[in-house]
Amino acid sequence: MILPSPLYTTDCGAAYLGDSLKLLDQLESDLIDLVLTSPPFALQRKKSYGNVDQEDYVDWLVEFCQKVYRVLNSTGSFVLDLGGAYESKRPVRSLYNYRVLIKLCDELGFRLAEEFFWYNPAKLPSPIEWVNKRKIRAKDSVNTVWWLSKTDNPKANVSNVLVPYSERMKKLQADPQKHYTPKERPSGHDISKNFATDNGGAIPSNLLEIANTESKSSYIQLCKSISVPPHPARFPQKLPMFFIKFLTDPGDTVLDIFAGSNTTGFAAEQLERSWIAFEQEPSYLASSAFRFLDKSQSLQDTLTLYECLINQKKSVYLNTSKQLSLKL
Ligand SMILES: C[S@@+](CC[C@H](N)C(=O)[O-])C[C@H]1O[C@@H](n2cnc3c(N)ncnc32)[C@H](O)[C@@H]1O
Image (cartoon, rainbow, N blue to C red; front, side):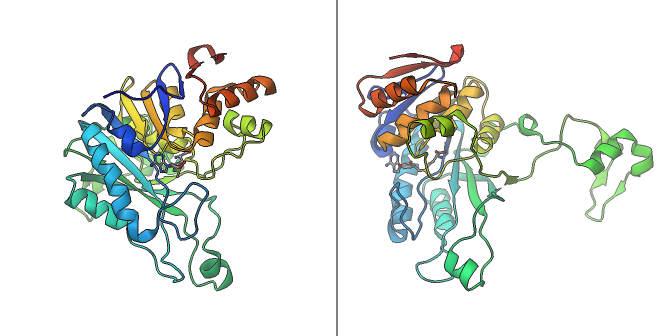
């Protein structure tokens, strides 16, 4: 099994251009600790990055997931982000994201470790017909994110992703006597004084509120500087950050099979995990290298790098340990 030479590498990872169905076959079994990805969704409206029709979508995606199962190790996780969709010309939701989940568990043997919901408050109202014009549906601003595993006990540590305490909790910790009397809840749970202990943060819920806004990153700035359109459906950086911290340790390997602008690889690099990115669209993968550069990069260097990558002249090494000098 030999992967082709990567389009670019960094100190922690490698980005490969090509069809993931073929590239996945080149990876060893049980190699990967976390596969974190967001495929093109089963949308009615075609996007620039080639969505598959709703009828064929489940089978199309399951073929990739079968290969993911093979490369994932026994304590590994597969995190799959799927946006909601409507049926064609009807104010009726498609069940495709649930059909994918059920097929992955019933037929491929994945376990649903937990379902997550990514709430993006910055999402624009759509579809216009049902939400804005006829006003018969609410704005859809939540994606389902299926956390799947091969065994009942995938590696996970929620202490790595604690969130800030609420104001009420902070008051309680400052003066437990004044604000709280330990008692048994109606559910039978005995809430003891330990409840007021400061553990460095609160346990996060499975509703992740992350606005998808990114305007100041080197990726956006450098794409703009050479007039290359940024990827139209990027993860917010905080989404891969959350799952990488939660489900892996430094040195583990993270794979994104629909990498787009390689948000996942960049998050993994910052968290000192190894990463592998697969993406089939040359311009998306070429410009994704900008994530690893300083935004003060000169226009000429940015152009030279982009042209070298888009023409696939040779594999480029981006030296991320030295705030990014280029070796072309
Ligand atoms: C929703 S986007 C992923 C965006 C990514 N999460 C980011 O933050 O930029 C899905 C990507 O999958 C890519 N894609 C679709 N089919 C593919 C395939 N067979 N192999 C590799 N990439 C593919 C598309 O070109 C697109 O960039």
